[in-house]
Image (cartoon, rainbow, N blue to C red; front, side, top):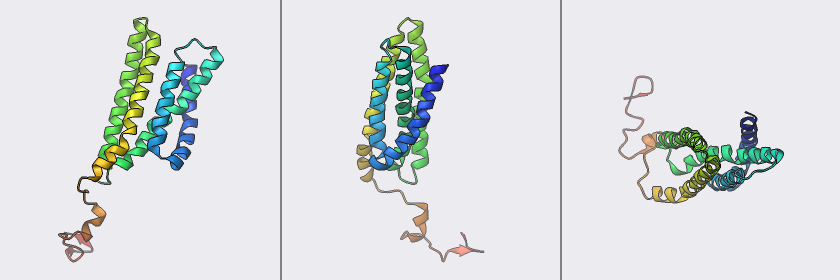
Length: 175
């Protein structure tokens, strides 16, 4: 239970640090780096460290882990246009929640088989997959730029085939 408190306390600190860092360097870069650091922390937890050092590694890994996930949400806005952003954030969140369900199951299954140290390896691999996935966001953004942009609802009055402000009835309500 105390490790859970320590990793979450690290996560609180991590959110504050990652937000400031992402403002300076970008959410994609920060998230990718934080996922790699999370993987390193998970691998370090495989070792039999003194208890105080283990707590420190857990705290620092919490700093990186939770804020890396939140920076993924922040990066969503760089990939999806305004008309797609809510659906995109839903997909990103759904994928993340899938990992949050499968991770403890996998860790428990490995521990039940007597392979608890492999759980840390599996979590490190997940961190590296997260880093690779978020590192591909700029590529996805460039590929998305090749598509025709979806019309923005706020621009509908300016669109060439829009009825414009003259097609209103009543007290400013569009038909």
